[in-house]
Image (cartoon, rainbow, N blue to C red; front, side, top):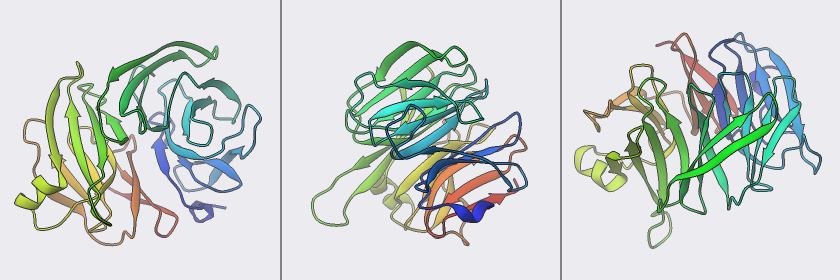
Amino acid sequence: GGWGSLVNPTGVAACRRSGRLVVAHDGKKRIHVFGPNGSCLQRFGERGDAGNDIKYPLDVTVTSDGHVVVTDGGDRSVKAFDFEGRGVLAVRESFCLPWGLDATPESEVILTDSEAGALYRLTADFKKGKLKKCQMIRSQLISPRGVAVSQTSGAIVVIEHLKAQGPNNSSTRVKIFSAEMDLIGQMDSFGLNLVFPSKIYTTAVAFDKEGRVIVTDVCSQAVICLGKREEFPIFNPLISHGLSYPVGLTYMANNSLVVLDSGDHSIKIYSS
């Protein structure tokens, strides 16, 4: 039961300390924890109504203090677990549809609420299972989903999903905010079309350790580097073949890039 046991995976995260990878997917147990060599170490989070259950996971992150945090679209909550799969905290606050999330170096969690058009910062003592604060730090976003936090600068990048008139006309926009939540730069599919020949539809985003913004593009089945915030956006394809529907991105401690491919239900790891 290695990488091949995933069903419609939606999110991936790396534990920087241990090299473990955590994947959210739609199987019987919704969270799988893999060792660096691809062996499955742990599975948890069945569909149901108990405290440790997960109805429909949309994204996952791992905090630096070793907790797995999941957005559950099924009951509109954020749930935290230890690596053994024990539920330590469930936050329902007043989320409309919590979607993407990423952890800061201080074990805070930045998350998007796609229906509310908002970005939240969630502070908790996960070991004690106590929520300290859940603060909205940005509103008036349009269907924000994927989000990433720079581990060096604290900058935050968000993917908005814009709905246009007519079928198949939806597009995406990437926004970068400073750690103080000032808008530094943005780039939408239309703006990209002026610079690059292809329409880009972004599903996942990450920062590499130099602070460059890395995104997936399901139109060209690629992973693209958009550069650091001061040069954003440049266009540098990192992976342009071998992917079918990339929906998740994360970097491991050794700087390998992990791509979650929903097209063939797999994890693909690339050396830097």
